[in-house]
Image 1 (cartoon, rainbow, N blue to C red):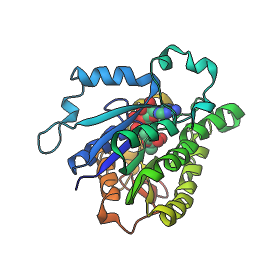
Image 2: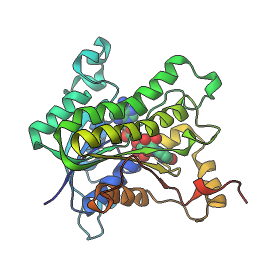
Image 3: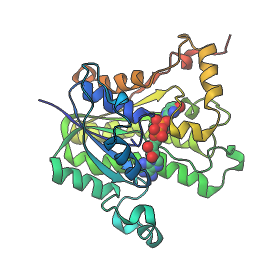
Image 4: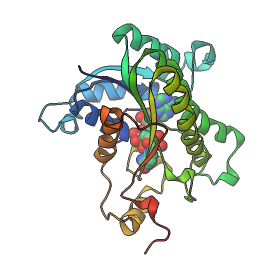
Length: 286
Ligand code: NAD
């Protein structure tokens, strides 16, 4: 019987969310995505016009199908949280039911249940500022969009997740080691996400038999990463210093997500899995 996945944080074919969608689709899962409200229209149009057809090709030659796309802004939990000015904002006004609670309700109405939940989103408005120069507002915004968004997603989707299901997020080693340039409280947000992975694994495991894991991935030239600015330096650093001297392909993260979501990983929960060519294991570069 085929599994159904909801992947939050897909808005083009460059990021980890897209690669995870492909790996899950290749393994036979039905794909639903949650796309950031301001990005949904262009993503939908581009997909419909065939702009992503080349990157939709699965190993068997067929094209990945996205059964349904949902607008989502994971910074808002329920309609009560949405400020007036955003309701009338041009990029939000035409769309509805995009808070986390409403997105979960929509998925439930359309499909009943899901088996796999993926959180592949982050945002830190001050990411290019060092922590010492980060404002309280910027820091809290990073944690809201990048960490609490996951707590909220899991909280709202858990009731419609089939027991035995799996939830996955994406993190970065800047949470535990100093990565100059990954600022704005984003390193703090990833540390929260990783700690929450353990606590949520306990709570979701006991309550609903759901596994909760996070993938600590290597730098990838995604839209989000290009916004940080130092992505090329990081990729070069990894190429020079990691045990495996190759550029990481997003598919390698996608495949790990597919493994974690599968029964092959039935005893893995609360774990942080590095998919980084082994870079995390190095003490110094050579
Ligand atoms: P990406 O740009 O493909 O994905 C980020 C997505 O988040 C975008 O689609 C964006 O529209 C969405 N988003 C932002 N704010 C949102 C909100 N409030 N509500 C809903 N969606 C929102 O970039 P990516 O690099 O693939 O990022 C995916 C995940 O991977 C993130 O958690 C990121 O931190 C993590 N990650 C990335 C790298 C890297 O080098 N690219 C490394 C390690 C971890």
